[in-house]
Every structure is written in structure tokens, then in C-alpha cells.
Image (cartoon, rainbow, N blue to C red; front, top):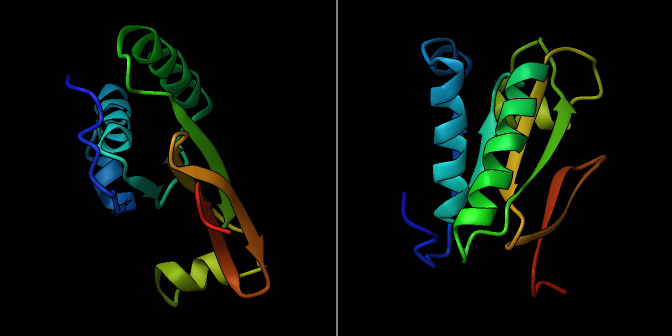
Length: 126
């Protein structure tokens, strides 16, 4: 697997149904591949505790082996089960399934949730 291609990155949303069709290893590889491209990945369903642990192990291995890959940051936010689409789920204060956001650590300073939704602060943004 090659390192970051230095493109600006984007946001990749992986639906819950797509996640259900993937095995644990495939999910982890997809997340790492996206991060290496500089993409933020939003999973409509949080990885299991085991998958998160395996993701961290794999990322640490990749960081050791790949000079230009600095890792990922993980964050979750409660989503609403009442529908209204993905972005409505970010804004909801109702408990439900958790969305998982995985960002390349070299590109993002912080992810914050406020009353207006989700705020991602990229490095260099002030």
C-alpha cells in the first residue's frame, strides 16, 4: 500500500448496509486506505470494540512502516434513529446508534459537536 498521495482529501461516507457486507479486516483496510489518501471517513455504524482495537494496531504498524503516514484520529457522535438523513443525525441530541468519524491525523486539528452540527478544524484553518 502506498503512502499519502498528497491530494486535498474529501469526505467518504460508508453506509451501514455497506459495512454489514464487509468483514472486519476489509473495514479496517478501507479506513486506512482512505486516511492515507487524506480523506475523512464517516461510518454510519460504529466499529465494534474489537474492530477499533484491530484498527489501532494496524494503524500503528502502518505508521512504523510508512514514512509519510502519521495515523488517524477516531471520534464518535450519537446519531438519531428518527431518520432525516446523515447530516440530521450529526445535529441530533437524541441518543441512538453512534456514527464514527475517522480522520487523518496529519490533516485535522479537532472535531467538535455543537448546536449547529459537526465542526472539523483542519490544520492551517484559523
